[in-house]
Amino acid sequence: MSAKIIRTDIPVTDGDIEVVRKMLEDVKFAQSYRASGDIAALRAATAKMVQNPFFRPVPAGAAVEPGALGGVEGEWISGPDASDDVLVFFHGGGYIRGSLDLGRANAAEIALGSGCRVFATAYRQAPENPFPAAVEDAVAVASALGAEGRRFALVGESAGGGLVLSTAMTLRDQGRPMPFAISCISPFVDLTLSGESWDFNAGKDIATREMGNDMIALYMGDADRADWRASPVFGRFDDLPPIHVIVGASEGLFSEALSASERAASAGCPVTMDVFAEMPHGFTKYRFDAAGQAMARVTRWLATRAKEGEETSA
Image (tube, rainbow, N blue to C red; front, side, top):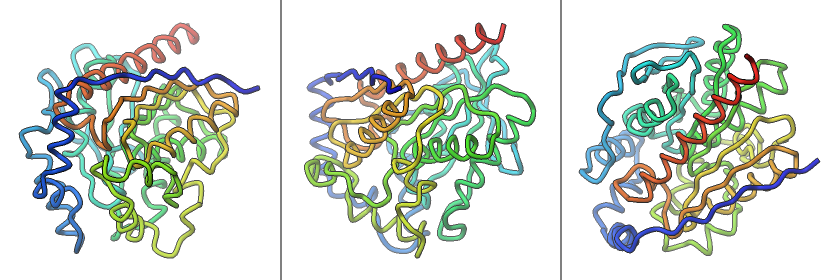
């Protein structure tokens, strides 16, 4: 039986729209975001981007400690009086140029807002560790929590938003304990780049199809880009937990986020989708008013799912 998508289209301020316009016109910013060349240059560009004053800071009150789960390194992030529930967080970066630094601000905000502990995962990246290394690490972390009998949810941004879906599908297929919820922020779920929005949003987004192809080539090599572990939009969505999707209407990957939501709903999975008008890829990382709204919606949704699970198990 299919389910309905609860979709909310959210307007943004004129100030946010003006900042997007300036970002798209800023040649130096575009070069730092889309930097091409060797992997060291790409990662240096990401590190520089995190230092941009417009990048959202780590909120006060979050405790950050190094740790590991399932043999995978990462960091634990928690606020005061955190519950035993764990939200496993996966940063973005196209599977090649991300870092814990890139995702820390939003991971900390989720920890503080949801009341759960967050484990931010430093999954292996290409080209040193190509596909499917990232998926293997994600599954190892989730499996370790399941083996301990811990309640957990999966949260990911961009490439991490694809990882959370492929991880949940793998856990289901292997008969392992499942997450109680999945949250996808600007999810990168179609590495074939076949979505129409790469065309109709061209010029409106910071990310480009060319940039995507460059990163995917390093991650996938000669592997099939349509493999559901890399492109979970082509996977089976039956028997997955509730899914929350945050996406900007101007993102190149808007179509794939919508397709994944529709496929999940058709398989009977409850889907909540929040679409922010005129926002580009990665908008939740910057000091947009829309970013604050989006992350508040993520944390409220996760807190609600966690509470529902507690009441069910009580």
